[in-house]
Length: 291
Image (tube, rainbow, N blue to C red; front, side, top):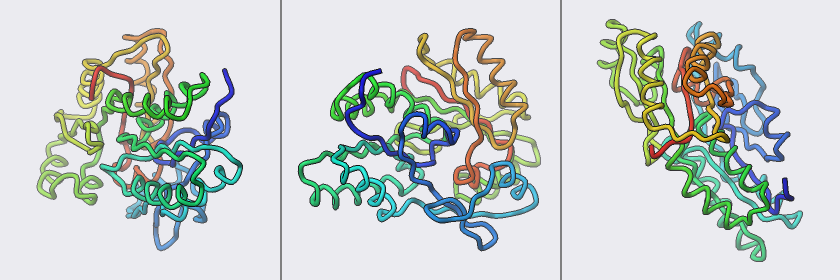
């Protein structure tokens, strides 16, 4: 690995394990949520484990999320600029959050203050470990000694090749977030219909199918992913889940049946995205031909 010539900042929408950021020298801006009148995450909120968060969802908690502020983004970016470092920021999809806008505002203000340094903000158009996978590819590119401009150009080309395929176990969380109608949620729950979804080229959540029952939904989710996958020796699969670890391991087994040498990483869907997707959500991400 060559010396990285600029610094990388991302936000916690990428749902990577906590140790990943430290191990890869990534500055993390934490997104936050409010539950039972208590602020969690963010820059100064309370801490909570993913397991505890999902246990509270099961007992009826109804959290609400908030994006990173431009002030929070500015504080993180300026720390690096003061050290004479250029900065690449990679954000949660603008199709799902206003966090990209906050970073863009912060970057514009700071560029005037630090005209000799470079700040690039990339809208990942990705979510959860799809964003994490995108960040992982970009970090590997940066670690080759690529310039900020070369890495940003690579990122812009790459992002339309990060596949997201997922299913939710309960439609009511998507209904709360305005992703599906109330009637769809009620009928789907009664008939045990599970939607199969992806994140499209605009970074928005889109239904691409439905399945009767959980097992069929997981199979359809993987079929959709494999159809577009473009996997080489260096291309991993990432799995994120809403406190459904046993099923995540089952999904990993199915991936390894098709790609025996693949690296497969599993982690929780964090509370910010989990607020909108709910308990039991299963998502798989990999590099593909196109979204």
